[in-house]
Image (tube, rainbow, N blue to C red; front, side):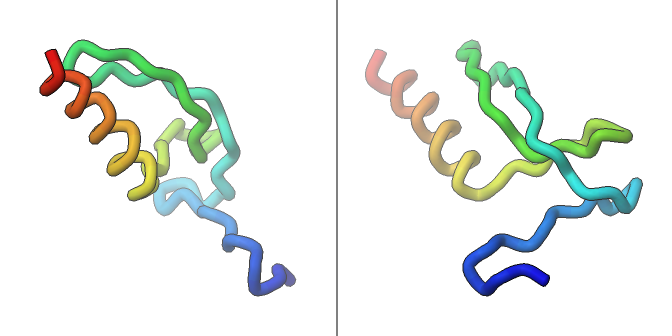
Amino acid sequence: MSSPLEKPALICLKCNVQLKLRKAFFTYLGFNFNTELPRCPVCGQMYLSEELVKGKVTEVEMSLEDK
């Protein structure tokens, strides 16, 4: 049983297995970045957290606006 401070395990809805942290490579608006994401070890489906989307994507968009 997990403690109240631990995040619950993420489960792939397609494969019904626990997601594992894996490196992922992204290209967005011509910018490339790597990060570790929870991914399904069976089908490769990735979980993109709101934090990642709002953080990295916004960072890329802001750097484009500065140019």
